[in-house]
Length: 213
DNA sequence: CTAGTGATTAAC
DNA sequence: TTAATCACTAGG
Image (tube, rainbow, N blue to C red):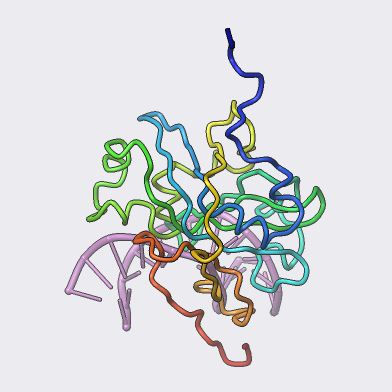
């Protein structure tokens, strides 16, 4: 008679995130983020992500070196990097690459798998179910990813936020393009999404600024 | 399209 | 110290 499993087999392996940010981004599509909050548990299936890397990626928060804010991106793979933007929103990344190498994947959008009632109660302004986690700040809000979730290990069963391996997404359903809202490195197609998902953000090109391209 | 909001950072 | 920037969302 099987007792409690020693390690949860459904969780994503850290190694899936440690080799390369683009491979990690594609690997994360179709996986499930499961988050426990005081009012219940919500799980979303990731349908849109963006890869960011360190020193050679001017669009990355880690491009200008390690600071108190981006420190998690410099640590080992599989930890949440949650940051505050535009005075009111949080966004969440999963750190990638080995300890000392900065990298991460921004969680841009997901489809609610469960529990829909808890999810709707958390985001009552969402008009359609597809809007619940459509966009990085909505996703973070739905899953309760704020400051106190910064740094948590999503590959550990005891963590309040966990990443579950999903059924593989067929390669012909994965689409790619430039990252959203990023002025730098506009030619780098490191946004990945599952074709046809109603929860994928509307495309908005990064603003072109004088002297940049 | 634009207002709203505040941490973070580079420049002074 | 100050000011610009910012991987965004909601409401017209």
